[in-house]
Image (cartoon, rainbow, N blue to C red; front, top):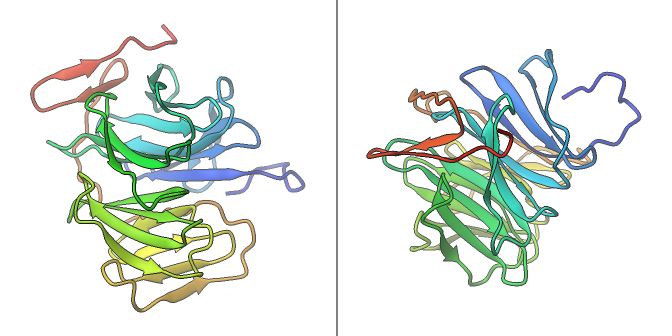
Length: 264
């Protein structure tokens, strides 16, 4: 991403997301305390949010409901808004102390949100995408859980721990946990995609490994200082279920859950 007029300004892109429906890129910048969007070619750059943010960590796009989700480790909450930023709502703030990674599965009959927390009790949690049905699914052997990624086909959640230096996966309910890779190479995994190998990065290297065994590690790019975010896009990864709502909403198979936006 190129920011005109900012060649000498340090930008801290924590996370980015590509929305294939509109071919737009969304990213969070913790140094500026802003969330941005732009076309894939870098044009039409827009500030989605420039207020009410302190340290946006991860962002995710609900490609079905057309909403934007993000975590803020200083505000200690998880928020949701429409993609244009017009409506905004705090989904979760109670017992949220240092939220980091965030991923969504908005497909029909799923509608799940997963996030990691680096607080006093490091863990990974999940809930429905309206914040209801909250559950803690991973609590053991985690210290700095981050780099969450979903394999929609197998319904697996992948995650890394930079302190304990591993990449694991488990089922959506936290069961059947399996270690993919344990290595000093897992230094500071801040982003990951599963398409179908696990592709991940730390602050200098982009690597690829087999998603089941951790074998066949390939260094795709190296000596790239300051890497913070990675998005690998597979055209068939997100099905074409599209939905719209006048206000922020999560559509379930038997009802629609709507909340009153804070900005109204």
